Length: 578
Ligand code: DGT
Ligand code: CA
Ligand code: CA
Ligand code: ZN
View 1 (cartoon, rainbow, N blue to C red):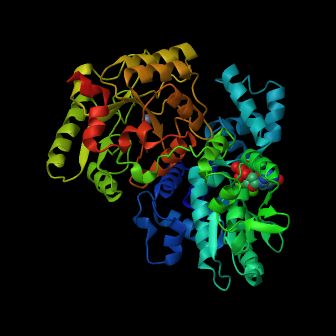
View 2 (cartoon, rainbow, N blue to C red):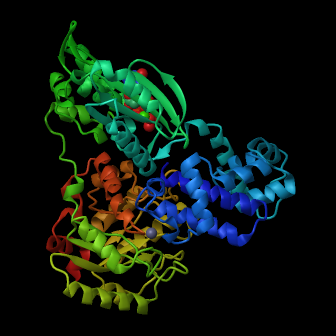
């Protein structure tokens, strides 16, 4: 069981307690525990079942909740949640999953209107009962209607790549561990391998000796989180996990591994084009190989398959039929940026604002990743509660100066994530910004403004010569929050002209999205990749920023933080101010 799922069940308890007017301290305790579990770098379930780790040592996890989590790991159910679900209408949990609805609103519906299920809510919306509740204006009603419409497709709900990554790793490790069902090769195909920001299901391809296939399939169905074996054949199986995620497994013979990986990686549109090329060459392409007549001429590796069609091997992130096949034919595919090429992380938070780790802890963790530099970008005053005053920022920078003296081959950049205020003004004065090594400007408030207003706010920030980068430029968060309204082309052109970087943020924001990053590149924008880590584990999100960059066909030359420190600093627009 993955941390994300344990966290989800714990926060269900918090929500259900809140709805049933339970003890507010208990509500808060469960909510804190959920956050601790979600943020923890290691799989909590393994720590618990390993036995030698006391989870009450984790912040926010007391004896009671520790017992609950232990029971969950051992039995698959959280006793407290079971008890609440048994006493409350079960449909409340479905209501809580609707975007725009949290425990406060669900409680209100439950108490005032006896709305206890999605069906009840639909009914109440139609009868205009929700509109009569205080605080439910037309915009909010529209949002709730959209959320309700989404639940119709809940069964096919897509999972964020970040979360899918945990499941993929767990299943691959499980199958590799093998027992009597020894496998040779294993890899994850599908949209997961193409690194799409959300995935519909996981597609796993395995090779083994033909005689072992049945045992491998059997073992797959016994993975601890499987709640349903939806289909099981001689060489394939489909299961559903308790999180709702569907996983497809294909077992093929070793000579077909490349062909199977190619086929099941897709995309479907890419594969259709490949089959046309095969047909033109009087060849046949399928999941078993490339065939001339009934003779298999390739299939062992993907390279072989593409080569048989006269193509260079195409990176999975490009396989969307957006022109990559013509490039592969002309041997002109770009050298996509790799994680190893990233030399620094340019957005992260410490406990001086809303991060969980100290400055020293973030530095140590970043050094372990092999970086040459990082920027510490705690928030500016507008970010209420978390933001630092100019005095605090200067004090932090002084501490960084001192730390840097003791660091070899590594530099901490004095930085700030500065809010672009609702008025369009910047949250910090120029004299302070001028003292920074690097400044990233972002919008966190006033997201409901018009496209004109929001675009102008970004343009205003881009005009300031001390703003080196615009962070998470569209404000979207995958999958639940779309971009704020924005004339992105205008912003990208202005950024390119001003030599202001646009950030690709590798947190669950995945912002810029791949398509907009590609559009920005066409305008001549240079980029910076960052994680926006709020704890040391999240520094690992760089791979998701790289995934977006690769799907946008970016190369190292497009991304400033692939450069060594002196070049990075020289490439910042502020270097021309001195
Ligand atoms: P997803 O799971 O919705 O995020 O997207 P994919 O691309 O992983 O789609 P999925 O899981 O339905 O299938 C995985 C790949 O297998 C897909 O990209 C192409 C290939 N594939 C599966 N079924 C078919 C099919 O009926 N025809 C063709 N041409 N390809 C297929
Ligand atoms: Ca899939
Ligand atoms: Ca599939
Ligand atoms: Zn931010």
